[in-house]
Length: 423
Ligand SMILES: NC(=O)c1ccc[n+]([C@@H]2O[C@H](COP(=O)([O-])OP(=O)(O)OC[C@H]3O[C@@H](n4cnc5c(N)ncnc54)[C@H](O)[C@@H]3O)[C@@H](O)[C@H]2O)c1
Picture 1 (cartoon, rainbow, N blue to C red):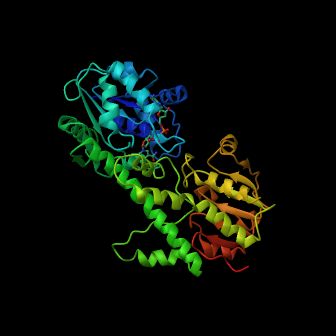
Picture 2 (cartoon, helix red, strand yellow):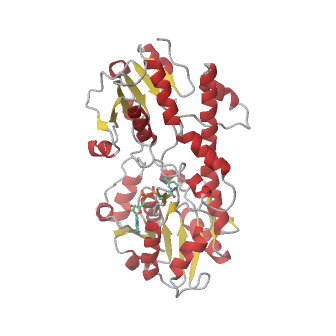
């Protein structure tokens, strides 16, 4: 089978390489010439993605995976086209479809009769049918006759995408019955995975938004409970451990917010659609308020932040992946600076230009002599840090550190919803 994957970023590239590794001919289409050149050399542009380097080497050298900037020409040779072009929100909080629509236009120029097009990118409900399918029809094709269209969200965790691709059931919803059936048959054939075929593209779109909204709201509840714990001088870690020991309670971990271009974005897709979204909006509000809350707590412990030297460690949106969209490290920078602190940033996964690009002054190694260290993303690379040399107070922005180990080094510890060590 010939397959085109349009948009070979964090999701599309592991997806393309996995399909190629199963013996199919895959065209990896991307507008980024560096990405195209990288892939065609068989090199891995995402070294933190487990197993991807090996898959790329094998599939490119076997001639099964080829990258190209000419999407229309590649699509003309394929019976299936998968879209993994990212959709973020714009400044007004609305889905920005610009790149995905451009990709649709390129695909529409090359699409062969009877091709299947599947959108993997998370979308506001109704987008596949009302916006994207007509774009692919381009006024000369008919969905259900000349082309088949479905939505099928990716349910993956960065860093272990290849493993996750076959781990969970593949959710599929067609713009019509045939679109759904063809997409389901594609995933069964290629991945051999369990497929959940829903009644429509809209149902599949909403299922993915439901996953994201659930997690955002769950974290918001954990964050609110953490503030209650602070008000009573309790430790939220032991509170949540106890609550979650009952099988109907699945509270997540509190922290200084939610980053990445999935969880904080998807509730906003609900907030712009039909139907109520009061809870999605409230969850966003609570989570967005956490960096200011955290800065206030730290300020209260050190007698104000004016003139204090603060280090933020681990600037990516979560540990061990070099991905920074919507990272809360930037919100922490803003809040600490607003209170008069001098803030530097360090990330063992990012280069100096990336650190500057986020707005931080890069901290020089050895990391030492700060008044406060904020551990935002606890990368494996920070294991074994001599915290005592770094700062006398550690703020654990995701309750990820071993508090006892930190205190044993003579360093004060403060977590989210966790009391500070005595002075
Ligand atoms: N990253 C995740 O953890 C994750 C998890 C589940 C679902 N998703 C979904 O996957 C989508 C893609 O995420 P990602 O992390 O791979 O994004 P990404 O930004 O890493 O990759 C998108 C790629 O699309 C390319 N592109 C942009 N415009 C194009 C065009 N017109 N034609 C061809 N290529 C084009 C970009 O150059 C880039 O390489 C997200 O919007 C999200 O809905 C992501």
